[in-house]
Length: 388
Image 1 (tube, rainbow, N blue to C red):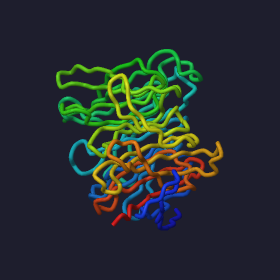
Image 2 (image 1 turned 90 degrees about the vertical axis):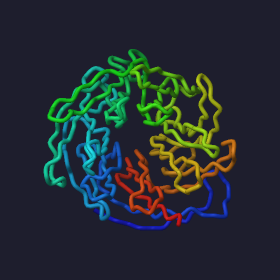
Image 3 (image 1 turned 180 degrees about the vertical axis):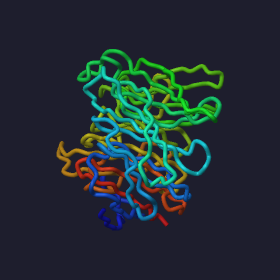
Image 4 (image 1 turned 45 degrees about the vertical axis):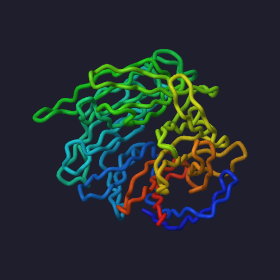
């Protein structure tokens, strides 16, 4: 494993603006020997109260141990096809994360089942974990943990396509979004059911506390637009259209909080698209601001208050070169007015072919740091927030 450090003390330049207060991030190369890095997440794996990094790579599942980022392989070749996603959370409160991964990835095969595995750890969590297979939809693409109406952790899975869909046009049956319930005390078996179906080509989603009732809500990016799945405490739920566009839908979405506490949605459009847009949602219609139009294969978005401004910023990553943009990269956008229409931007890295992003406070200093996996660059990096 190779490691490299440098300080990014950068002025505002992605959008041609200038700011007197530079943003400082220190980049650390964690790994230079991954194949694709489909998915990255952060959780405490070993119970030392420090967040670790987990990566779903093409044929292996890694976790990197904080703070020296020693790499451990916990699963390998769960299926002949690629691994594609990973989700981790401490669902039982013992201080150590439980891990689930998606595999069997082939976006062109909309009929063969995908693959989903709970990884059960040995006493030594640096050794190989035991995979327990769960049923999965074809083209399973994203998984996330979400609280149900009882406040319990459940796993939500999202396919790219519906069963038997035309993968080129994204038309046909709607995707089936599933909820999986982990085994209760003294039980071994998971249970699962379909939450809803009907959307097409759903590339990614976010889990959020949209209102004041106990269950978490989902915001989904699809060919038809951005949708809110809103469950209630009585077990009922509704699917609400939040925003549409002329770009054949959205591929990535994250929920953030604006300068006046208002909610916004940051979306890459279309799927693997060239635009980053912020929406202020209202049912059926949404005001929007386009932040970037020259992304190439935009593939990752996170939101968070990295600069301690009292409102969230947006970070986007893209993995391709084209359209006159000579670099791949990661860029941070900051809102500079009360109504959410003026945004400045700064490049954080112009050498990272970003496949996925995660945000977390990795060193306990109170500031959000970034983790990125790079597809063509075949690497994993941490961007330490050195705001203070």
